[in-house]
Length: 99
View 1 (cartoon, rainbow, N blue to C red):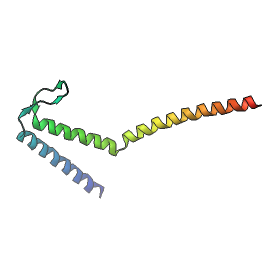
View 2 (tube, rainbow, N blue to C red):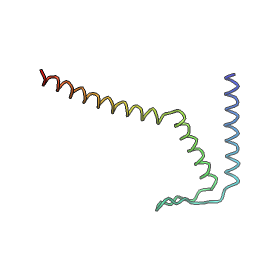
View 3 (tube, rainbow, N blue to C red):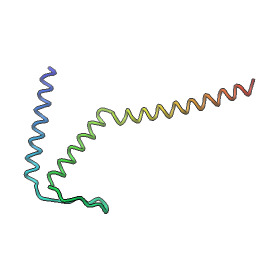
View 4 (cartoon, helix red, strand yellow):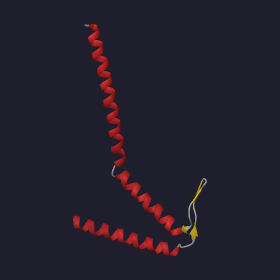
């Protein structure tokens, strides 16, 4: 069953690659992108669209694999550990003062 899934995944990715190449050939008119004051060099319209698609797929995979969430969780754990250590210091300092 796993081999079948891998085969279908490979065929799907191959189909996406072929369709992307066909799309690139069909949309070859040069355009430039403008973001505020930044203006890009002229590239084919298909290249810009396929690049956005690839970037979106990569970002989707990162979010899907929870890499961002894992990183945020590690930062939050570190922050909470530091806060706990400070609170423990304050508590032991108060206990020492009451003795």
